[in-house]
Image (cartoon, rainbow, N blue to C red):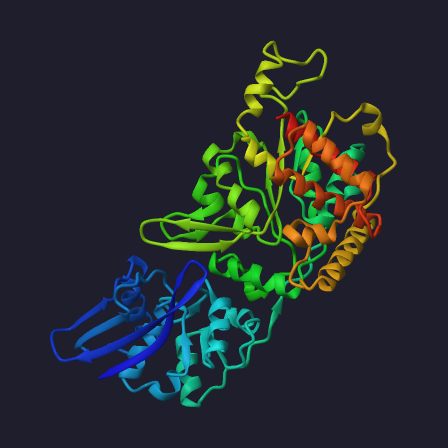
Length: 505
């Protein structure tokens, strides 16, 4: 007796076909899984055996062999449980082989025969739709599968319900698409007292998805500002939400099978390792930068991060993706994130504050800031100093501009950018931070005065070619916030003001 079930394994964000073959033959009773399974797959036989006992089915006292083809591909994860169980039930003529052959099967089995959630349902559903197949998955993730554009979905709560569905004694309801409730950031920019220049810089960063570094003494409000960035960012578009949720589905962070339209906000601790930040590790999982795709990555206390981890950010900051290469795998993950970083000017943090500087100033500041390389700083568009908040600002009971007002300006600026990209024949672009090459020159054409100012500054402060182009992008965003068609001298001047710290370091 033999059966074949369609299932999958994951290699980075790629979903690979696995032909699961089950054979029940004469011989001493045994249950063997072959095909390069990892520990979780090898333990599937015990979960399957217990699930069968829970519904009153005994495995035949014969030799059971499960082969996961191709045999040279490593199989990881507990999602093979349901496919193995389906294969056994087919061999035992409880489930029909013909009907199951048109489905991709994945799910983890509990000892009481419940079918539990697994990672990667969304990309598998997209693959099934492309191959004109159906999907059998856990009931709690049926709504996630619907977002993959799939119609034929069997979302079962347990193994017994799945058997009854295919036998015709029970009809499982079709799942409906789940959408996460819009989570409005409870933090508001109106709560920030003073810091008008920093708030202006944060608005520009939000409008064009520019990277930003805030430098200032402890307690000046750097983390407070960063935490409120998502309150002035527009929600994800459906396309952005889908590609972002695919990454979160693979990583097992997509909750309740709901597509989330809220922009990701990731703030890893400065003790994070390089694989945790950029991706990799034993199972080649996506890192924080990929989980922040289409959202915000906040790195507080930037110089305290591992130097190699920070230098690994250089490629994704430039290309919007990260390639992780190891001996056994080679994966490319999307990583188009907005970097917001914060740091103290020196180790004690009181540089420039009379009466509070340590005896080593300013030498300690030079040593502390030297932890950040020039190439990394050159990839950050906005450098802004956040001074200590004055007692008068703290005592002032009048609140500042609320996030809703700033969000309206940011949304209008982004709509201007989208219309421009569509007119230039690049509707796939969304923000000015993505402008490159000839397209940048067309979008940010300068008049003579603006061109002269930029050239003189670049020559005097030895601005790199990357810094030159990033200044153009920033100036284009500033002009969009003011609803200006052309980029003028004042826009270049403000953009250059945010580059001074980079040239000084």
